[in-house]
Image 1 (tube, helix red, strand yellow):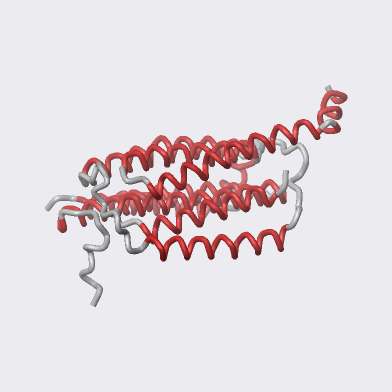
Image 2 (image 1 turned 60 degrees about the horizontal axis):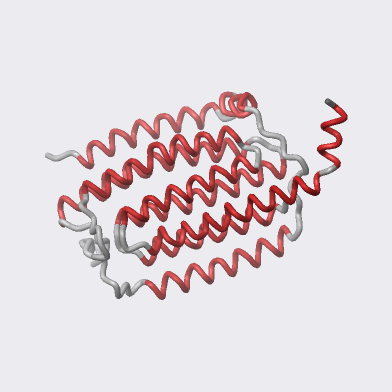
Length: 179
Length: 99
């Protein structure tokens, strides 16, 4: 067993190729889907493409060895938030077919801002982190370690988040109530 | 794998989300773009967590997921209230406080 582990760690070149390939394919899918989300005329299609983006994020978490975060991502985002979005779309009777005016006057401003931001961020990241490598053979983080951190040092923020969720629940009911 | 692969992917997603927030007028779509932005930040946090071996990044990512759930709930309630009052979710029509 130990020999096998050592061999797996030594022969990391093919493993890394596979990881890089997986990363590249998932990343390309995510960027395509994200662009479709912000450019789709039909808002229901945008919600479905959003599912692709969120699933891609979960896959990247698994590549990084953060399995608990990945599962939480699937449960909370794909399971709950996307359903909430679909309900919001239905309840607001949002335009189903390109009813949004074609001449969006913010189009140029948005493209300019985001391209400028991407250029800046890309320059800073490449300059600052260069070719920093992630540790070889990323071991999955155990759920026990995550829960130790949450219920150890982060106990008070955790309780505050639960209060925040309660407040958001009550606030959403009060705002959306018909009276 | 390089750390920068993940950071650049997150930067690209962040910029796409910023474009959506600025350019789109549908309130629900703006909320979706904000979700893309929050997810890109989560990728950064988890990537740094894997880089340094510290677990705090993953805990912060979990907190961000919880806060995003609360944000979507309140945000969609506000969009519903706007729709009830204005009969539209076009954010350019909502200019009561424009002055």
